[in-house]
Image (cartoon, rainbow, N blue to C red; front, side, top):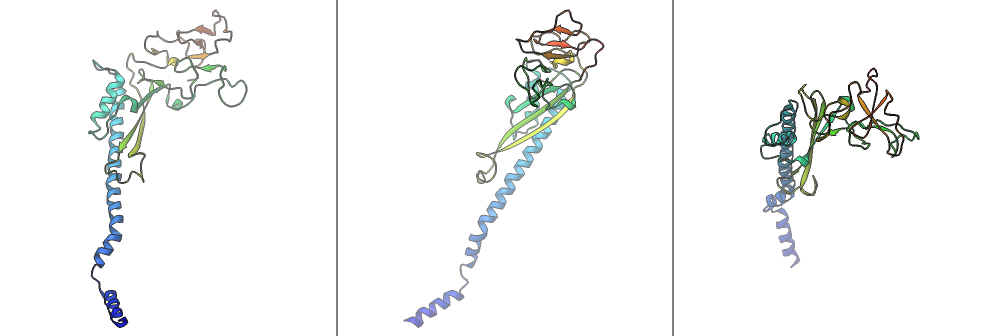
Length: 255
């Protein structure tokens, strides 16, 4: 009995039938992963290129200051992006951030404040410059909106791209989506009108009057409980943004 069983075992050991199937079973998972990974990453790269191109085209429209009839300037900027998204990138206003700044060096910077206790950070009650005229201190001085003529505008967009195959959800992305982001900063053409930042003297948020009196370039805000200098002082004037306009006609603007 043993010699016969030994002969069968030796015959099976020398047989190469089924070897191809066994090799494929080892290689196929890796091959499929590579193919699907190539598809997913190619789609991500394509969508990212579309997103950047759409943002660039939208910013080119934004700098002109044009406001098409029947829509807002900001909504039309989003529509321009979607027109260049080729149906792959579909955005809403929630995906897009449009912030206006005095100049390029101020992008992402906090509103200036007087650090009275010397701790290196803003504390409630400390005087600050309300650049965006929202009556509060902000860690980013940007004013929401596409800006007035000559101002600097930062366009930022984020988009969660759904993964195409779904097989790599546990490896890349988050819950079947891959986050994309793009931004571009431009300076508006010198057009008339538009919603500008507080310190420029252009029009402020909707419904508010024009900015500071001639020669007064920036606003310094104090807590409501702090006594303000006399309104007859040549250095201070009350303003529509509940701040005080600082800087006389001969004073240089810090912006």
